[in-house]
Image: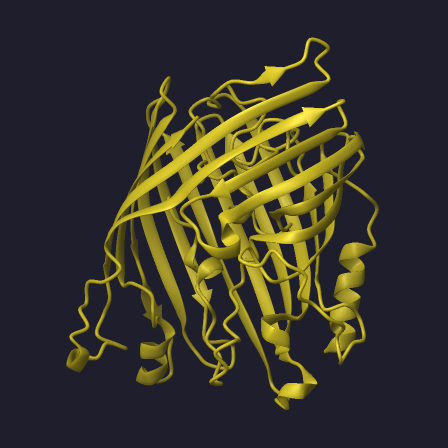
Length: 404
């Protein structure tokens, strides 16, 4: 298995440099320098630009859980994790200096611990073909995560990316999920001919909640225990904006096809080596938006765990959005997840329907969705009951978002 992993990573990392992921309108992941919202300070020469921004999301949530995993003796209700929430309250600034360096820093006041620092990076890019980004930013994996915050088709990401997998061992420290999100590291990226793109990076692999250096060397592989990641994209009609629908872009034709892979060496408190692979496609065509992803994760335990078994998981989703009017966007999504590994039968299927309304001129966006979590193909009732533990059977989210 180690030899197969090495071959796959070599194929991903050792390709020629070929395109950047972001264009000028989405490069910081929240509100960019090119965005019309808010205001920008600039010097007379134009060699220095500075733009503060704000993004606030407030949601009303309703979650209904089935009886599996609930204990009536403790008065556990079927309705839980419901009420009002603030997923994000982001305050930050972005800027550009000398036409070479772009930078961004943002604080998410709705988070806690290390996740308070959402992003903090500088990007040195002397040419379109090559740039270097350092700091805390999004890892190059998954179209859903790389979409600009606040421009996603649904108010919540696909469950197949965010829910922890199920392992048949009582290791509380080993609860990985397929999505990797924000992390600290360094990335080389670039764009050639506005069509081909690459991102290659090294990250801590500890996620958004850790802002310190905590890694060591792998006892098994004798390499730094980091997250090694890469992403390649093909954008045939020009650079694809990192958006899943924007009322400002109703006449455009952009497409992206991407392949990504990563290896998190001694992740999850040095217990496992996690390989992730992803394939994605997205297309904005006038009022239409289409997106689809497939991803796979292989978990192999380190030798110190004395577990010779490995586990494989996969998932994906397909979604579509259409602007019924210039401000009203309808949305559909089908999400599926092999959460209990391929060693057991059955998977989760999670259809969702939603709508987005854009209040142009005041930078306000209203989103609403309903998602159902179903289970199918399980060999035993116990496997069926365990597969959706912690996940709501029916979920409703209504979210208001303001950006400045």
